[in-house]
Image (cartoon, rainbow, N blue to C red; front, side):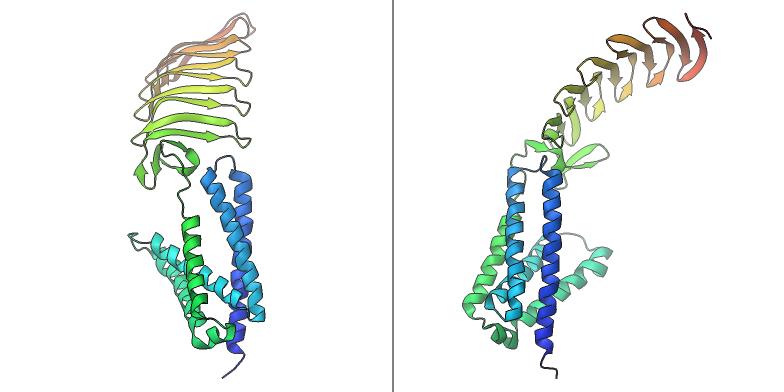
Length: 304
């Protein structure tokens, strides 16, 4: 038997764990930089906790090359945490093909590595005692508790970042969401705000430019646009005016440019119908539609 095999295996596991932690740190830092405007206070705290624990594990991985007990504690606690959180997250989840070909093999490898680190020869190599084992278990539990905290501080007003949107409906943890919803621009300024009832958009929704100026207002009933919709230019001047019924534009439509009417017409059951007038200070064109089909075009005060 090759007497160097256990040592080489330990080194291999340490290097793999170290690389995983480095990649995890890189991803977490990138996540914090790109999504900080959407993350809750608890989520940011969990991210910093993850970075701290990952750094601790990296130091532990390095210390295994000198057969330090601290290295054994770090790697074992990390594997215990990984196995435990995976098993916990899959409780009650239906079995699927991905679990068979990808997740379960990795889990079995982790369990095998954990078994190897618990063998008498490995524990003797690192000088592990019962107290060290208990410390590894405690560290794994602390990591599980700290990193599994619900990142949402108030489920009655929630950032859309934490919600799943499926076919226009909002869900939280697989359940239809009821409550206020908002999201922010990358500079932290409010981007939109509204509410949902039983997963469907409800009431007035307001949208903003990244300078804080109102961009659009909409009204919803059971997830469908209903009532007046107004949109604005970034300087706050009016841009468009719609009317909706059950998600379809109906009635008069107006479009402005530099506080002057530019286009005016009507919708019928979501289709352009009747006269549509285009202006350039003065009336320049009249188009007639019948249920979205152009019937005629008349030019006014311009060369045809």
